[in-house]
Amino acid sequence: MPRWFSRSLQGYDRRLWMLFGGRVIAATGFSIVMPFLSIFLYTKMGVPMTIVGMIFLGNALSGAVGQIIGGELADRLGRRPVMWTSMAVRGAVFLLLSLAIAEMVDLRLISALLMVSSFTGSLFEPATNAMVADLVPPGRRLEAYSILRVGQNIGWTLGPLLGGILAMLSYASLFVFTALTSVVVAVIIFTKLADPRRTAGQVDRFRPRDLLRIGKNRAFLVLCLASIPLSVVLGQMTSTFALFSEDVVGISVAEVGYLYALNGAMVVLLQLPMARYINRFRMSHVLAAGALMYAVGYLILGAASDMWILVVSMIITTLGENTTSPASTNLVANISPENERGRYMGVSGIFYTFGWSVGPLVGGVLYDSLVADPVVLWASIASISLLSMAGFALLGRIIPRAVDRVDGRASGPQAG
Image (cartoon, rainbow, N blue to C red; front, side, top):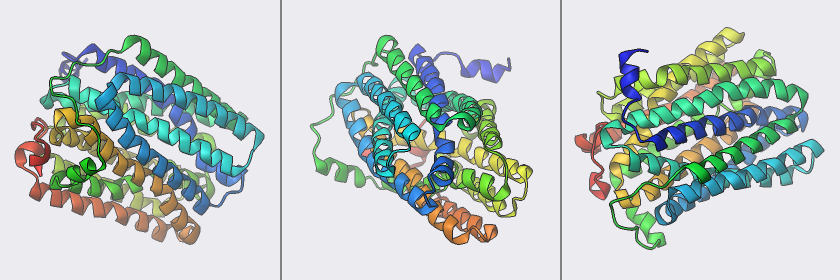
């Protein structure tokens, strides 16, 4: 085992490793469903991609509500009860979805269940990210978030491989498997995970104007706004990219699964060494570089005529993902006060979830309009990422250098 890797695994609270295991299981189940959902709706139910995008937009709205509620509840009730409850309810929703898919029920019912699933899943994320910030000192948080991403992407490696096989048998079986993994994670959290002790005082009673107060933190607001275009582009990965690969390039559903497995494998192998490398840079600069990688990765899809171009695109965009994801979460942790960490994670999650979920709508409209000219289609999508690059460059000019470093101390509203 390399020495840097051995050092990376030492000294963490055991609860971080329990969260790691939960991420592996949950991501395996979730990634079995998501890459193939747009394919199912488009090819099996005959739903136009624009409508598919609108379904994902509905998911964005419910997910945005879930993010802020999840953050608030995590600050008040603790991280653990929010996490296990959200996963248990989500498991039940996925089971209902499996029945709906098997019976090919009305699209409106399927859409409603997907919105409930998005809401319950969004409760989970701010609580998890806040718990990591509670458990891990500032100088090691980027690495800790990277460890969770490795766990998540072990799941993203396994899930699509299983999903590509199961999808050829029955799309409903995908949702059954996802339901089971969600329930398993809920049981692990409920029986094995304890909430960390927090030193800061309790968060004040929630008032709507509290969100406006967060918005006065200029650095945090710029970070959130700059993240929207990037997450819109990231949202293409589970919708437009998957459909384009099968419908235009002509690869099989199983081969689509292989591409997502490549994404997961790259995160597993490269996330930690990349995290250690980018530790030396300012987070805003890291985010800008990652946004540029996304733009390049999607731009070359315009020339895709076989599997190998898709592979190259996936490699470049995954490098961008490894660069931006832990850096963004780490920066939110640096900016947020300890007793409002769940709130800040929830608010930042609103912007991310909205962009990620509205991405398929943007991609769907562009796909239906420009699929005959792939170069223009993917150049249009790639240009969206450049908006984030400009926003992160602006962030680097206004955020204090100490907060912008990996080990920056949380400084709350003063950070802006």
